[in-house]
Length: 387
Image 1 (cartoon, rainbow, N blue to C red):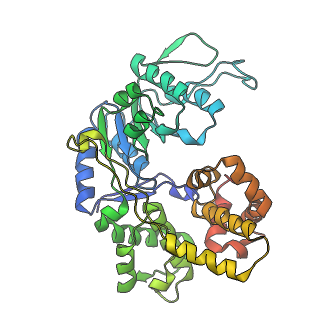
Image 2: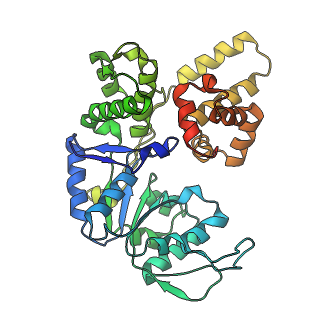
Image 3: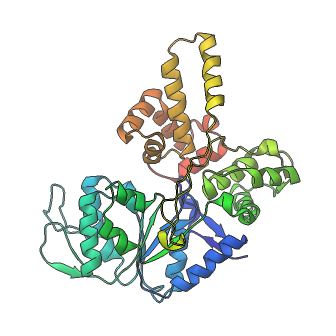
C-alpha cells in the first residue's frame, strides 16, 4: 500500500495538516499517477483541496520524485504570518531595514534555492504582496527589504489553496496575472469522503501509530465501527480521522473499537472546492450548492435553552461556540478565527476571558491533565505556544 507521511509527525500534534496519505481508492491512484507525471518538471504547480486533504504531503512527494530531491524543501504557510512580517519572511531583509532588524536575514526563497518552495494558503496573501511574488516568479530573483541588489534564485514553486482562486480573481481579491502564472500545472485533491477506499487503510494506520505512541494494547475496529467511518462525511478530512482514531484508542475497552468509542463531529462539509479549470473539462458558469446544515437542530437546541430562562444566556452561548471551535481547530487561534469569521484578536480576548488559555497552559505543565484528557494533555505538552 503506497503511504506518504510527514517527517517527524509526532512534533506536529496540534497541526491541522494531514500527516498521512494512502492511495488505495481509484481516485487516489489516479492522483498518484498524476504526481508521477508532474514531478520531473520544473513547472510551477497549483495544488487545490480542502484543509486536511494532504496538500503538503503531495508537495513533498513531488519534490522527492524530482531532480531537486537532494536540495531543500521549504514549506511556508502564508496565512500564519502577519502582514508586517510575511514580506520579510518570504524575501528576506538587510540589517536596519526596519525596527528590530539587527542582522541581515535570508528569506524563504533564498533558503529554498536549488530546491522546492511550498507556499500553502497562497490565497491569503495581500494584493501588494501578490505583486511582489509575481515579480519574483517572472524575474527569478528576489530583492531583500532594505536592499536594491537582486539575488538570483533557482526554485520550483508549488502553491496550495483551499479556496477557488478563479472566484477570488472575479472578486478582485487575487491578481489575475499571478493566477495564470501559478496555474501552469494543477492538481486537485478530492476530500476524504470522495475517496472512501482510503478511509479504513488510513484508520488502521493511525490506530497502529497511536498504539505505539501511547504504549497501549492493539485494538481493532468492529464491523459496525468500520461501517460508521465509511458513512461519515469527514468535513475535517484526514486530520479529523486521525483525531477520531486517537480518541477511540483512549476510551475503548478491551481490544475492540465500537461505534460508541468514535467521537465524530456533527459538522457538515463546506461547499466543495472547485477544481482548477484544466481539470473541469472547460466548463464555465457551474454553480456550487452548499450542503444543508442542521439549522433545525440548532434552532431546537436554542428553544430548549430559552425555556430554561438561564441567566447570561448570550454569554454562555458565545463561550460555548468559541470554546468548541477552538478545540475543533486543535487550539489554533488563527484557524478558529477563520472558522468563525471573526478576527484573531477577538478569539484571543474571548479565550482569555473564558479562562481557556490559562487552562491550556496548565495542561501543558501537567497540572490540569485530567481536565483535558490524557491524549490532549500529551499532545499539548509536546508543542510550544498557544496559538
